[in-house]
Image (tube, rainbow, N blue to C red):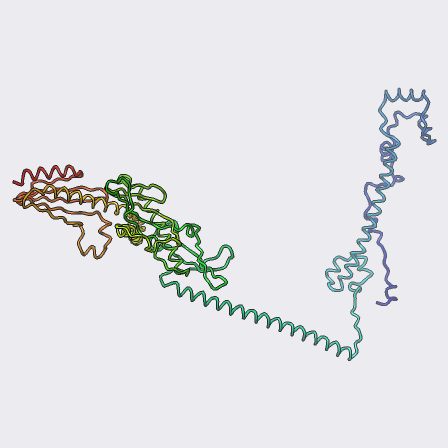
Length: 553
């Protein structure tokens, strides 16, 4: 805009902006009426009841000296009889200063209001160039009247460029663009090259990982994905426990397969107990020697575990699976031993169980497994090593049978009466140690009955007896389930024949695996004459002596 045009613009301050903002309580004293003026004078000067001539003269002269003594006494008398004077020279001066400062504040407020109005009009005039509606709304009526909206604007001043300068500028821009493109291509090439190398390494690592998985795992292993809590990465994990095989043990047996930088796989159990102290179940047979009260070891099971001498994933999984099985086995044995105290079964400690028999003791221990000091057949063999090995094998087989029974019980459905719903039969089998103890007791009773019958028939000419073991099971049942012989109560039978007409049948029945009773049936000339049941070996002997004495003639 030219200078001549700017000179034609008139800027005025609207007096209404100041006059409209007047304090309603600030009045002109010259225009006050007498009823309005008297209260103001009393407020500033004070009461007139105790005014004296001397005080008026002093006020007119502006003299600050005190009046004489008589006047003071007179004023004192008057003051004591009248209202106190509440106005002083200081209060008058303070009120004057207050009104003076108040007028100054009002003046500054008016100036600030005027300046802010001018600033608002200036901003509104600028906005009206771009947004006429918004600028016109906030613009004052005085400015709208004298200045048209949108008149305050700015223009872009273009620079005159020669063709040579334009060509140089184009070349410079072209060089800069080519440089940026070249830099981007080099950066992309570097990123692609590094990504390709990284992908090749990952592919090689994945190939080694899956080759290791294929080599060490078969189709029966259970692999699933999990997340590492420390790094947050998704990793493969393996179930090496017996949870899916019917086990109800608290340690399920899960481990992560964590790849390492050297293409190896680390076996990391998820449970802290799964990677604890490694223990194995060991069976020892102790027997008293002749003329000696001390027990000596006559048989001991192996403690090597039969593992391969390598550090592969397959071997580590086999070890972890074996040790969790051994821990569950001994835990079940401890639980059962507490209910077999009456049958000379004692849990001597947390890692030792003893079974007291007539002439020997069987110890079942949960000992620590030491890889550097395993039993590889270097120790001297003992006469009962095979028997001890069969005992520990039997215990492990019984735990396997328990897992199998648990799986079968989950498949069976039991219908609840008066209800249309059904539920799974979840009845765990816990017969591991009890069948073994019952087998020992049954064999001991057979030996006692055998010795007793042999002594009774020793002096009888032509007398004979026959022993049949486990008559409650036939060969076909044993072929279908070989463990049925030890898992069910055993029944053995003695048949005694005494010339000429006496026949006695003794049936030994271990009705709850550990308790027994003997059913005695007597036949004379083919007729049953007596049938009785005994639970004491002495009573059986007395009964047989009486029968032989009465019917053998």
